[in-house]
Image (tube, rainbow, N blue to C red):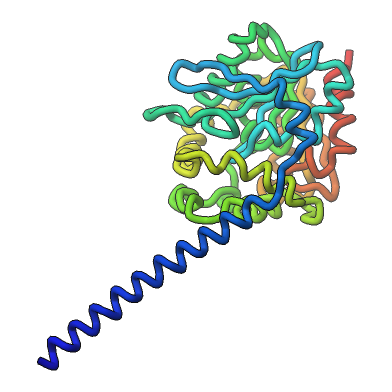
Length: 319
């Protein structure tokens, strides 16, 4: 009898522990959900770009992009776990200087839909999807600007399709396989869906900025929005696993073949992709220009906009 009583008591404690765990987990997500909707987002950005928000049917999914302004076309490509919002500190200056901006959400990222399996998120596939969009828009030649992972896409396009690119600007690009600290493992990325996305964003931006005081709730809210779509973190894990393909490695061995005029911008205090990568890239690409910016982190185009924006305009408008 005593044995039965102990077994029953143990079962009661076990089930009570499970119920309490579920309750506290529910409360954690409930509280996180309440906190996560306090910020309202970037009204000035949304008011500016919303009327120019477009989608292109890529057969199996829809790619989102912003088509705004008139003049010579400039294609802008954001980085890993980013979106068109990456360029919120830059587009006004470019518009005022007479450019048409095609701001792309990479496949699966931002407001673009997640391509169905078995899509592979390699550098060559991500690049070709951007090129398909430019063909849809009938852009024969264009200026190209890319940041971080978008910078390596810009390098891939410039190397393999030089007839399409008038000039290219790469900002803190991951032009070589990045240090392990740049990304969490694919398994860890998948677990991001279990955590308040705003906490993830805040931590990531602290690593991407030299001065964390420039990060506010508005920026965090805009960066977190796309992460709420179903399957986002699984997609991000696939992107992390697929991107650095054999063709990526082959690209890194042929930078010396690039003849397109190129500007390389780097934050001296980039904690994610070392500025030594930029120096090496500059040495390999004949005639390229290298600008290293003090007191700037990985997101130098945002953090140091007052320096970066004039560099962009001057380079694009050069005769």
